[in-house]
Image (cartoon, rainbow, N blue to C red):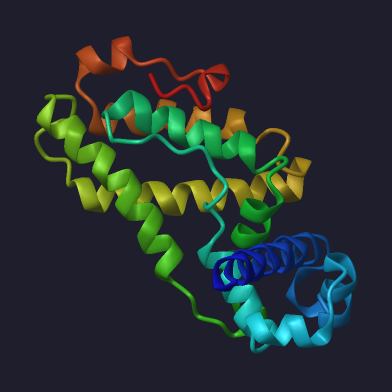
Length: 208
């Protein structure tokens, strides 16, 4: 009997998390009342507080788990995959509510007072892994620091998506990220790699 109960608890937790993402994405942190989240999840106050102690706890979970439903590459393969990954994220932000809410909450943390930086460190690590492989394959210029560039890329992506959200509700985000790469690549990639790389929004999610 323990296993079905555990599975049911996991399903309920995810149902609440996804409902919270919907409400946080639509209303922001301040406007996302617990009652709205419970109504969206069609759950009880008891179930809500069994899984999450507070709205702050729920917001932190949305931030931390923002990438859980993404189809990320299984292993790092270098510069082309890194470019494709950022374009994939740009497209996903248009319709993946968990990702979009997690990103919004991460950016607007002054409003909630969460100070949750771990998700940025996680993305820096994912990008850095691709750059380490790129280094091994001779794709990077000699003076490029993999961790430093990964940190810059996360910051640049974050700023680009904020501006895109304000300007076009992120409809032009893939184009903005493609343009970002056209300016960044000459500073990090060898000429041979730059000539072979495809900075194409239609490659988003192609992990080949």
